[in-house]
Image (cartoon, rainbow, N blue to C red; front, side, top):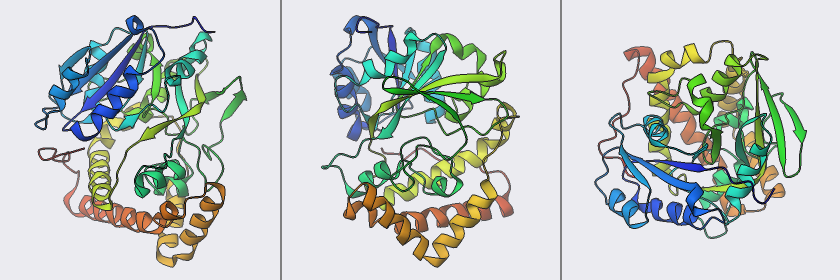
Length: 348
């Protein structure tokens, strides 16, 4: 439906994001979408590296403060200032791959039953660093998710976009995925995720927008206990990490934040169902200790999505992830609930 163009607010949380923000905003401005139906709302957590100035140069529609500093709080702050019928969560390290991306993502909303949409894959560009390409081809930013089976982008190792049991109907260029209360939900909700703004009052998005909880809240508040999401057959670039040093910092910060906020999230996730987490952690730990299962996975991924330089990083990424989780578990055991990660020196 070529003339279907609801208003869209692109929400971009930032904190010292100047290194990647320019490419992100340029890709949004390059979209083949009516300019008067598109706004960009940036929520900044106190950047000191020129992020805000760069955003003004790129003609960002609104810049709001994010005093709570986390990315989850930034999404909430941006959403409160947004006016679009649809909200698009685009992180500062995302790049929209082509000018037709937004139209493809918006198209499923012509069906009033669709609450949200998300790309089916991450885009692996030849010129990106090997580690960025590795995560794109793996289809996730945390290798542990591969062993748990809970992810939400196409994975070259498994050939699937999730291993959780979901009801999906093939439509023209997208899957209509019906997520049901009481079952485990895939990790849908970030990096190009779109949602109807009118549905937010039915979620606990304030003061922290926890990605994976939003759809669970919608299903819980729905009369039939379900929510429909469009998984669109397109990709999005995620410049997640280009070095293992950056990956280690991000993993540690993310795990620490999860441990801090998990008690508050438990209420919103009640009754949502859980994937086989303990079994997945055991499989992951054994694979790291033995080594050969990781080599086998890398070989399988390289056959499906050839990139030897990228897949050579699989074992190292898994070992680093194992160390981060083990350290976090020990801190939790001996020190109790974690404090939020320090962001005073954060750089994208």
